[in-house]
Image 1 (cartoon, helix red, strand yellow):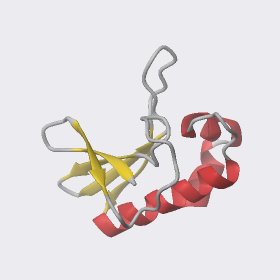
Image 2: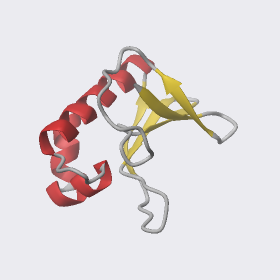
Image 3: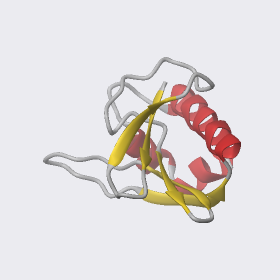
Image 4: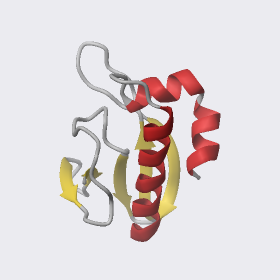
Length: 107
């Protein structure tokens, strides 16, 4: 699966990671999250969407190791598979079920 990673230069880079299962359509709204590399590890933000009905991503957690970020992406995908209703995107699923329920399920 391809996840979005924000590099030190600030640009989003698609990154293929074989440890994350395939199965979600790949666009900004369907990725398991954006993982931003920082000096203290990875920061995960979820639910963002561009376009005419943009949605600002929500901060989920900071200070993740690479392995923790991969494990989190897998949990987010599992949550979306169990709770998402086609054709909604991850942010819409989070809005519908509630951020706290989502956060408790994946962390």
